Amino acid sequence: MTTTTPADETAEPGPEPPSPPPARSGAARRRRALLGVALAAGLVAVGGVGAATLVKSPAERAARTAPPPNSLLTAPVVSQVLTPSTAARAVVYPPVQYNVVPTAASAEVTALYVSELGVKPGDTVSAGQLLAEVSGQPLFALPGPVPAYRDLKPGSTGPDVAELQDALAGLGHGSGEDDKGSYGPGTAAAVSAFYRGLGRPVPTTGATTQQAVDTAQKAVDSDRQTVDNLTAQKRAGAAAPQNPPPPQPTRPDRQSRPTQQSQQQPAVDLDQQLATARKQLAADEAALARAGAVNGPMVPAAHVLFLPALPATVTAVNGAVGSPVSGTLLSLTSGGLTVTGQLMPGQAVGVTPGMAVELLSEDTGITVHGTVAEVGTPTTAPPAGRVITLGGAGAAPAGGAPGAALGGAPAGQTAAGQVAGAPNSQSGGPSYLPVTITPDTPLPATMNGRNVRLTVLKAKAGAPVTAVPVAAISTNAAGRTSVTRVDPAGNRSTVPVTTGVTADGLVAVSPAEGAQLRAGDQVVVGK
Image (cartoon, rainbow, N blue to C red; front, side, top):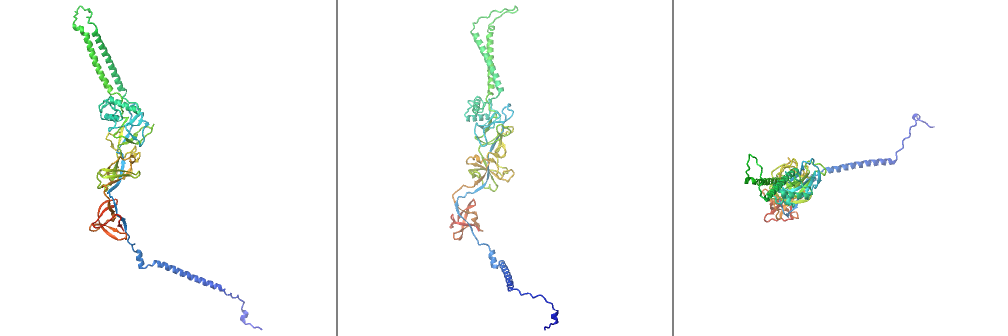
């Protein structure tokens, strides 16, 4: 029989105890622990490496902050010609431009229109060439220093007539027996031949002078008829028999007293009449000569353009056939081109007349040599020639007047472009010294209006000299100059020298007695 205790009787059954974990769960925990240890060790290692890069020893720090080792910059010694020079800019432009403003040659022309154009910009104009026709009036060019300021016609005298005679003679039309400067029949014939050569009607002095000639001619013709009649009567009277006239009845209060004087009275009257008629004929012939002397072919001032030098160049044409003429129709230049250099005050030191120069047009590649003609006084006005207006109400006197930049209707315009680009192209800019240049050869038309490079050669080129860069020269406290030569092995030696001319960044040197320096040697120019 089984016995129980009170505790056994009162206890109630509880849950079953958990089963123990499998063996592999412990292994996983161990792996995780090892992985954490390894990760921590890696972080510590990385931190140590980083710290090691930041921490330098004094020796390492000194090595890193020390300057790099010395190195030498060298340049070769050369043997060449050195010519001291100054480089600046220059402007090429025509010294004088002629602006042609057409006018009416007669009161019959009430409006001006271009009826024909014979030239275009860039054309070359020769003597006697037709430039244009305005309202049927020809406009042609002739050589002459005096601009046309009046109509030239029979009876005119003066230097302008002389230049007309010379110009026509140059074209093969001589003035015959006319005196120089006197417009007579020979000059009139030359004018007629010239206009016929142009294929144009010959202009004349007009109806008024022709009417005077016609009136004088009629008077002369009448006088000659009178003289002829009286001469015939006298001859007839001399040939008739000398019979006494029949007796005439007399009044009682008068006695007839025929005398020899009364018998010769008709012959005396005839002689007086003949003498008077001849005197009148002479007077009327003189009047006819005076009328004829101012009548005939003429050259209106509106037809001719006298230029001091031909050929000339057309720089602008401001109109087309059929367009009205207002202001300048044509612009021309003659006498070649001029060039003015612009030197800053510091550049002008040592520049004197006679020095050789070189002009280079960079955009065309043209090089022209010349000499300095004159060095002017400081100015701020841009280089420019003169503009002379020919014809029109605003025509300038023969001497011309100062003008702005040349080359066409708008100031500064030319066939080649605008005269611009100079360092002092506007008045009021920096002060410069104008240098007038005389080219050895005429400047080509393609340089007109160009801004070119000017090189003034301050000394004539001589024999080649030994030269080094200016930076190679050293001067000690005693004022002695030297260069440092470096041989192929890198060894340095000081060579005393005497310096000479300087040009293009080089200086001529002469080694002191006993020293040597030859072309090809390397000298120190920097470190």
